[in-house]
Length: 137
Image 1 (cartoon, rainbow, N blue to C red):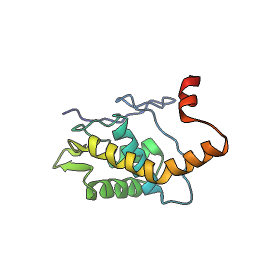
Image 2 (spheres, rainbow, N blue to C red):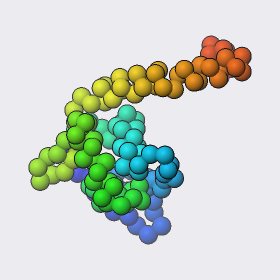
Image 3 (cartoon, rainbow, N blue to C red):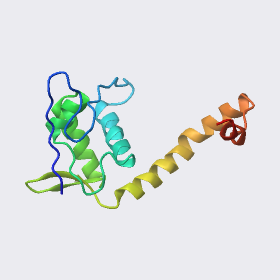
Image 4 (spheres, rainbow, N blue to C red):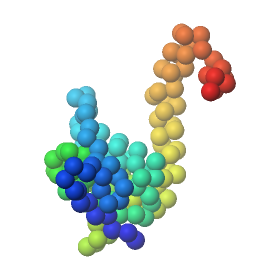
């Protein structure tokens, strides 16, 4: 299992893992730790954080996203509570095996329930057909 080391050179915004530092504009409507959880879940879905691989340390994550370490720790605690990540005693945190498929199902269901109805209504208002959109590419 690969260890994640976060070291920054002056003027360099990448880490040894190839992950770019991610300065963020956090939204006021939702706590930052929840938005950070969404970012990590997005990374798991995009396979930036593959199953079974080490995640950045709490301090590393805080530095990566420019947040307080307590915020990063809370995001990790919640992800662990939800069963997305697990602790390897003395090692750190890893993405739980098999979680990618579960997250994909969850995100698809959430999209279909929360986002698709609004998107479909907007397409209808603009008299756009989904098939025509794909044909335009």
